Image 1 (cartoon, one colour):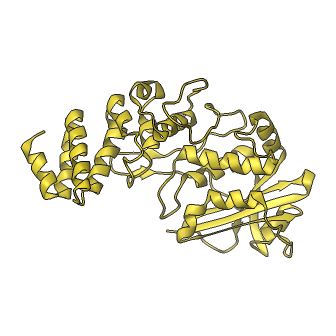
Image 2 (cartoon, one colour):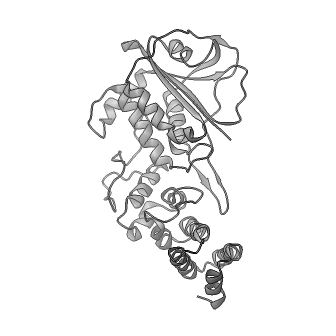
Image 3 (cartoon, one colour):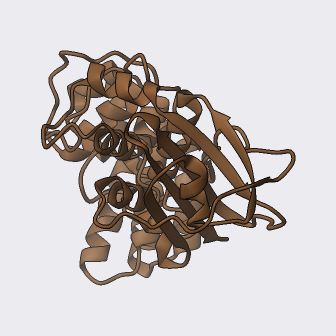
Length: 326
């Protein structure tokens, strides 16, 4: 490594280290960039406040470098404060077959494999490099949607949401339903958006009755309400579970898929078995009625999810209202 880069690390010049990272990426000097990352990490261990530089270098390596370098970032300590989890960042730009020969035996590397599944790869039967944090099918099941995926760029990231929610005239919802206590669906719905609650709020409810009774326990007396396809509902659940909301750290699309499956498993009451039988899970999810709603007269300036589901066969309904102000 050039002596001037070593000196930048020693004096702790963050601005110049970021500019040096840009130059090394432009020149495709990946070995030098990896050494710069190692030196920044070592300096952090010596008490220098260079973790922003180390995280930025790791992000750039995961996203832009060839697979042999990108895979080295799939450790459980790299990229703690980057624009997104490095498992997702690496998966956004590299096929699993290219990453696999170089991937370490870490849960992060296994998460990267699951992220590639969300990008359309069928990795059924492929051996994981390390422990499996999810234990989900390594292909998208027929009932699953195309989940919303992050777009990572050199210095920014976008996390697009599914299509917008309901529009049109307001409709009345029923108030006064008594919430059911200690309900597993309610728990998993809250867990889905738990990071939002650091500065926002999330409330879920289960009631005996229809979807209007569930929504009326949280909102009303009027809302805009729209029934949606299963694929739309799952896309919204996956989007919410993948995010950290307006202020938290993003968890990644694979984590969002896990939370979505946990909600569906509770709705289907499939017991403690994990993963649940995907055929049974999909059949039950498709038999439910799914809804999005919007509060009348209240604009949204942050991350919002209002989703409800009705199980007509059991005379049960559930609703989640979550908001994290930006």
